[in-house]
Image 1 (cartoon, rainbow, N blue to C red):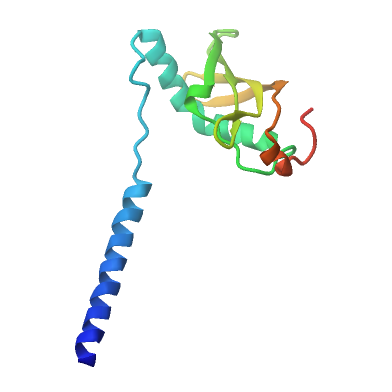
Image 2: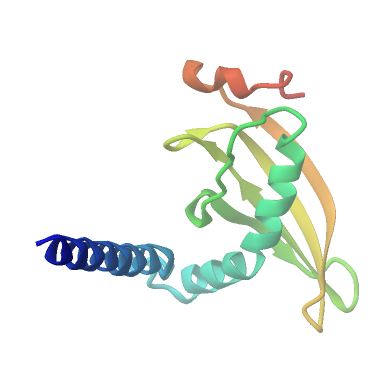
Length: 150
């Protein structure tokens, strides 16, 4: 009788381990997709450019706000817009992004504009960062404020 309980317990532990691994693996394999409503060539191009810059934009914005806010900050692709794109100097393209970082469930923290200079090899350099607007931080996130946004 003890032998069957032991075998049953081992099988249950093994089953729990397998289920945990299956669910954990599936939770980490989320594939991000582009906006299904983007139809024009300009909308699709904007999405592509934002996708190529989003990791860098997220790092720069998070670094800027870390002086003011200690909680988690999210930068969503749909909260980034291309404000301007032009050739300001020979051989380089300048891209200006408008970014609205979020805290919690889509609470805007501020509005910033970032300017990148890109060469023909795809090398990008941040050449401008301007914090233009503050938003009211909801009360439940006030505990993460280090100092007022300046």
